[in-house]
Amino acid sequence: MKKLVLLAVLALALPTAVFAGSSIDYSNSGGTLSGSNSGLSLSGSVLFAVNGNGGFITGSNLGSVSFETGALLSGSLQIGGTFASGGWFTITGNGSNGVPNGTLFTGTFSGPVTWTMTTLPNGTHNYTLTGALTGTGSGYSAVGVTVQLTVNTGKGFFNGCTKISSGDTNVNVVVPEPGSLSLLGTGLLAMGGMIRRKLKA
Image 1 (cartoon, rainbow, N blue to C red):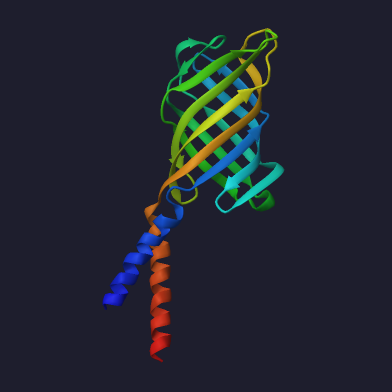
Image 2 (cartoon, rainbow, N blue to C red):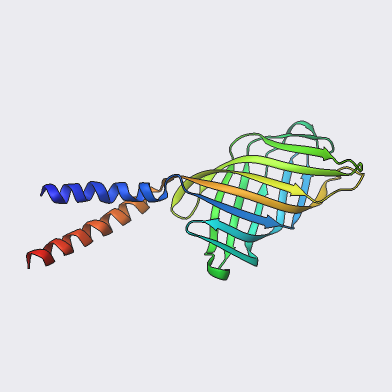
């Protein structure tokens, strides 16, 4: 009986040891970044790399990355500012090259989103969006951060619409969802029982 209790404890602890603290990195490019005082939104950006969860997958089109921030809190669209938390953020896979088909991560911006303008030596401009995230992946809760870099806007300023040059979103697993823990724990208990019966036979 004591052995079964110990096995049950190990079965519930193992999933946490495997998943908690691990991270997955998603890379995207392209897409249209639109903005107004109501917020910034990205559509049509292509997911081209997934690094983590036991492997590194690349491809010309593995899925998509899209989001919408909260409203502008301070600053301006042209010179940079801060947008409110909230909104939404979604990474979707299309089933290519081993990437699952469906939602890979969905969540919201958990804090203010920064919109930074950088003036290069030649007088042209780039903009960078940076924001912290909280949400869920496939069977786990997660926190993360996304950094999205726009294409060079020339010597003009952001006028409400531009393209994304590159983006990176790093998602860190906090705790597997209870359903995943219970399912794996139950499976391990069943396996332990089968092995115990075979040893007695």
